[in-house]
Length: 144
Image 1 (cartoon, rainbow, N blue to C red):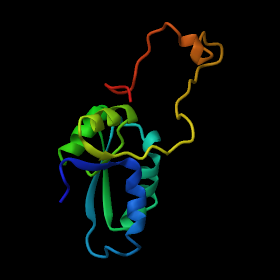
Image 2: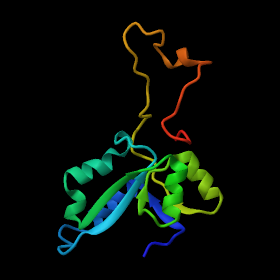
Image 3: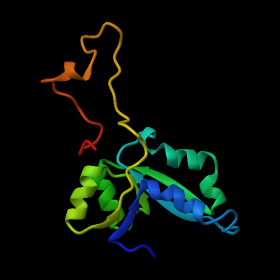
């Protein structure tokens, strides 16, 4: 049974599966829920690769991915025991830890930022600097 105040974020999910050993769960698959702060698969690619390649199934796990609105919601779902693993942003995670939430976060998927700017040729915006003073949007409520 999962402790309601202790949980682990995304990147520990993949290595844990590997530690269990092939064929360790020959019977039924253990249901695992992974929550992420947006519907994009790009930032959760290790989980989607592991699902697609059958790595989790090989380890006896059936991982279901749920997209919810922002890192705050991810942390709430994990704290409430509604999910086993998640991918909150580092800022909200640090804030939660400062409030006493016992959580582990491994932040080492990419050697540099996954984000950038892509524009059509001839656009008025050609660099991040061109956005200075402009209003921009974020993909989730907390922008993580």
